[in-house]
Image 1 (cartoon, rainbow, N blue to C red):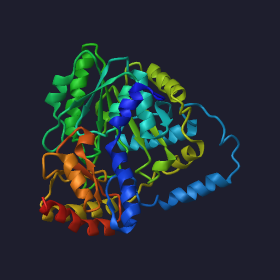
Image 2: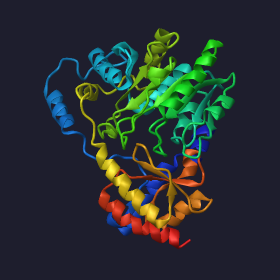
Image 3: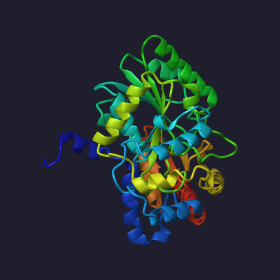
Image 4: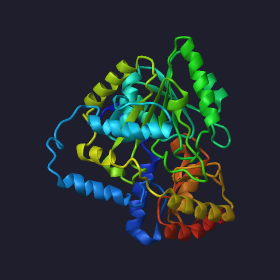
Amino acid sequence: MPISTKISESMQKSSWIRKMFEEGAMLKAKYGVENVFDFSLGNPDIDPPQKFFSILKDISSKKIKGIHGYMPNPGFPDVRESIAKRVKADHGIDIKGEQIIMTCGAAGGLNVALKTILNSGERVIVPKPYFAEYGFYIDNHGGEIIPVDTKSDFSLDIGIIENAIDDNVRAILINSPNNPSGRVYTEEDIIALSGLLAKNAEKGRIIYLISDEPYREIVYDGVTVPSILKHCKNSIVATSFSKTFSIPGERIGYLAINPECKDVDMLLAGFILCNRILGFVNAPAVIQRVVAELNDVTVDAEIYKRRRDILMDGLSSAGYDFIKPDGSFYLFCKSPIDDDVEFVRHLQKYNVLVVPGSGFGTPGYFRISYCISEDVIKRAIPKFKEAIESL
């Protein structure tokens, strides 16, 4: 076999998101793009803020010595200081540039953090539903994912998390706003979770709380995202600007480490080393400079809210069941039949593409990504209705 057994097995269980995206491409080729309703991929379609283009044009036109050269592995010092100001404002903590590591997106940041902290065989608790790639990221570094149930509204069940903790648990990885449910974990739950980890720390067992937050700015109805850095001493935030500025292809993000983390200097040194030896080396140079100038802007989340509301109204009228999302741009809908994969295949007969909940560790649901035009959403509603009525 030309590839390793492990990769061969991983390919068999690879991301449902990509599978649906690829099947969508075939349907579009067959029926025409305008006749296929593709809700499969979380690829933001809103244009970046105008200031992004202005700053990009300005920086790329200047001959700044060394801007395209190698840099310190954690990123340019002035960029890290600028990002620290953003983190301080968002999280309400005193943090400096030296506690920021610029990364190749949140995915790069998560891999850096997991490689740094995990010994072979150690476990990472992840509440369900969860982003499908987490299992691969954890496995990349010899760890084991431990998925745990959440409550019926997808909020954290602290009791279940506590029962899942054993001597091999090294971290808890949360994602809020959540992909795929859109749930924002409440401050009450974050405080309770932080208290649980503090009790473990008192016994000499350090369990890191890692929060993956690329959707932090995409929230609705006055909801705010509580800060784990504010409430949990041994905490790490991984995030990206993919959704904040609608620039997922630029692969730019950062890690923010709580300054009060135990052995914080050693942890930071490990992150810097892993950023290099994983092959990222450093985050892209020009785009680092750009995002450092954009602390005062984000995309307009109201556009996504309007789409969410159109989708919820249409699906509710058609008879679908779901929990109202607090943020992100996903709706996690209950499958009308037990087999979510079968129902997703059924929707394909109507040229509607969604992702089965099985791909997020939660069978019986399917994910709808509404970072697409209002026109497509409106034209898709009758198709969803036909599909459920034909069962």
